[in-house]
Image (cartoon, rainbow, N blue to C red; front, side):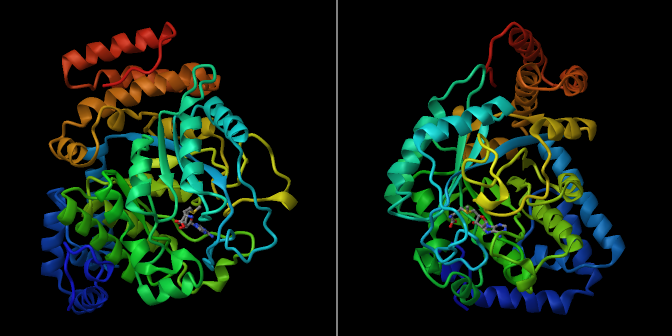
Length: 473
Ligand code: SAM
C-alpha cells in the first residue's frame, strides 16, 4: 500500500488502496457493536475520529445508532460553535471556462449559456447591491480561463471589492473559490488579503475524476488534489475543502475527504478551516438524472453529522443548493456557515436576468432573501453572525485552531456575532426581524461569561446605535 499521510503526492495522501481497504474494513465491521460503541465513546470526547472510524459510523443504519450519532454531532456543534451561524454570499465574477467538467454548465463546449465577465464597474454595482442586503463576507467564484480570467483580473477584482463603501456597507472578508493554481499565484492571493482559499475536489477517485474532467487544465488529478499543499506553502493557512456529492460513490469520497483533512493537519499542523458539502444540482445543460450517484437526503444528513464528529474544529458550509428543510436539518447536525439571498449568475445581484439570458451555474433551492433567512435563523434560536474578525485579528491557521481547541474562541465569536448582528438590524433589517433580533441580543448578552467582555460588548452595542461601526474582539 502506498498510503503516506505526510507525503505531498496526491496518490500517496489520498491512497486509492487505503480507501478500498477502509470500505472493506467497514463492511466486515458493520455489525461489530462493541467497536461501534467504542467509536461513539471516542466521538463524545470531541477530539475527532479517524477516516476509518467515521466511515464505519456513516454506514450504521440502525435507527438507534443513527439517533446517537445525530445527538453527539449536535452537542459538539453546540459546545464548539454555540448557536452562531456565519452568513456569506457567493459573487460570480466570470463564467468563461476552458475546462470540460461534465457536470458544470460552464464547460467550454456549452454554447447555450451566455458568457459574461464582470468589468470593475459591474463589480462595484454587484458589491453595492450585496452591501445593501447586509452582506460583509463574500466567496468569489470564477471559471478557469487563463486568457479571460487571469490571476491579475482576480487580484484587481479583490482590490475593488475591498475598496467599496456604500452607506454603512463594507465587504470585510473575501474568500476565493478559483481553480487550482501555482504557489506564486497563491502568494499573490494571500498578499491581496483573502480570507479562505476554497477548492472542491469534486471527487477523490482518480479514474472517475479524469472521466468527469475530460479536457482542460482541471483534467490533471494530481495538480488539483495537491492545490491545498501549494496554498499552504504560499502561506494561506485557511483553506476550505469539499467534494461535490453525487458525482461518485459517496463512501469513497467521504473517506477521501477526511483523509485530505488528516493530511493537511499532519503535514502542516493545521487542518481545513472549512469543509463544504455541496450536492450536484440541475443546471442549464446538466440533468442530475444522468448521474447515478445522486445522494438521498438521509445519507446526506448522516454525512453532515459524521463530518461534524470527525473534524470538530472545521467550520462546515452549506449553500443555497439545498432547500430550506435540508438546511434546517444540516444546521442542527453541524453546519456553521450558510449563504443567503444568493445568485449564481454573473451580474445577478445588480440586474434581474430573464430566463433566456441566464448565465447561472446551477439552480438554487433556497430562494429566500437575506432578511428572510436572518429572520428564520433568529426564530430557530440561532444568532446570524456577520463577523469577519478572526483573520483581521491574525487568528488564522494553527492560531485559530489552538484557540478553538482551548475553548477561547467563544470569548470572541459570541460577542462579535452580537455586534455584527446589531449592525445588520440597524442598517438593513425589516421591522419584524429588527424586533426579534434585538430581543435575542438582549438575552444573549447575559450569557457572555467574562464580565469585562460583557461590559465592552454593551458599550460597543451602544456606540453602534449612535452610528459607529466595525468593532471587534
Ligand atoms: N472553477 C473553479 C474550479 O474549477 O474549482 C471553481 C468555481 S466553480 C464556480 C464552484 C463549484 O461549483 C465547483 O467546484 C463545483 O463543485 C460546483 N458545481 C459545478 N457544477 C455544479 C452543479 N451542476 N451543481 C452543483 N454544484 C456544481
